Amino acid sequence: MTIKVLCNRVVVTVHRQATVEDAARLMRSNHIGDVVVVEDAESRVPVGIITDRDIAVEVVAHGLAPGKTPVGSVMSGPVLTLREDDGFLEGLDKMSARGVRRAPVVDQDGRLKGLISIDDLVPLLARELAKIGALIRHEQAAEIRKTENSFSDEYVT
Image (cartoon, rainbow, N blue to C red; front, side):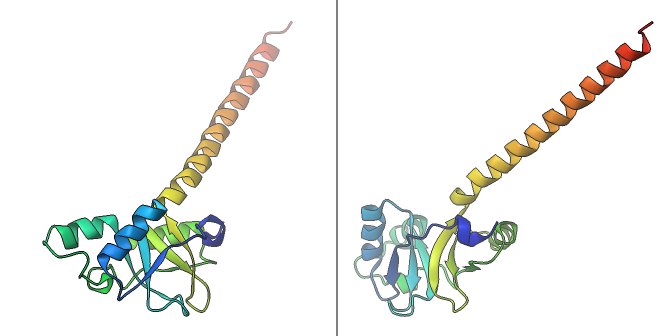
């Protein structure tokens, strides 16, 4: 399964020059915990990401003024991006290697097409693990039936 199938296509963006307060307002009004930072609206090429945690740790904890602090000065970047055609496990490996919980998804030209997060991947992993569990139970039940049939055949006179 590709990242294209799994990613969220609705992505809120902010320009690098916007203030942290602007980013926080976008997060609040959209009920999200992160905003993808783009160089400009036309190219939609992600250059960073800012999260609610970044705001707390990098702005509030340092006593910076959110209304005067540019997003570009506290964003995480360079940002890990995944391509739409990356496989699910490949994407998970890249995110794990970089220690990030979310990544913008881009097309072949590097333009923003979506956002993938661990929150999107956990339900898929849970479904796949449930299938594996069902397979194991089915295999065990088949083995028990086979053994019971063999056992009863041996003692039929």
